[in-house]
Image 1 (tube, rainbow, N blue to C red):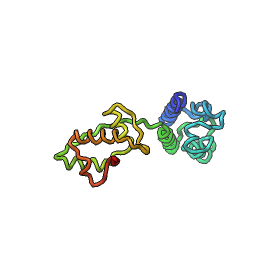
Image 2 (image 1 turned 90 degrees about the vertical axis):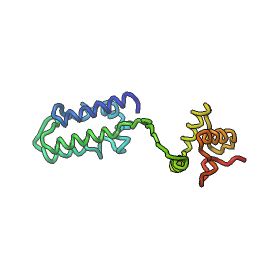
Image 3 (image 1 turned 90 degrees about the horizontal axis):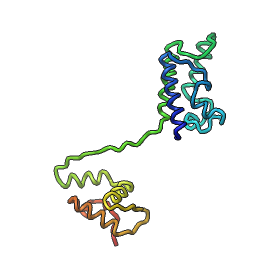
Image 4 (image 1 turned 120 degrees about the horizontal axis):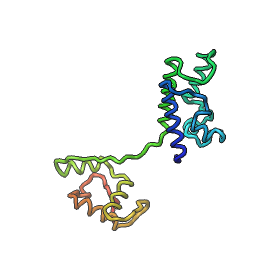
Length: 184
């Protein structure tokens, strides 16, 4: 998501929070920052469109918001605002929906283990089942080299990984399932 789209999404979330707390009104695309960016393109590229595959916010709480006004407040004319508890709940649902469109940022976590003996380390090693990415990153960090594991017969790489495991008192040959590719 580019910077303009992120900013427009954040502004739309703020708009709907304000509508829910009664400090702002909805006038459709006229006060929607996402619509200002994407409406002229029939919504193509809008995060809402990308999520629902519909233009005009069909299949969103906003669409329910419009329907609610038509059927529950038919005599009300003017900008849409919170009139009843259902209005407020729909506005809050729109906030949740828009929040769900934010890109999730990867935040690395640190995990600490307290092992009593080598067997616990071996068992955890097996449980983690070192993934391809993990092996690549491990090798890159320890040996300062990038590596591809696709059809590789780089025996030096596997030897380096084995040596690193052994340096940590982990005997890779003792595992019931081979962790590393057999060297020829």
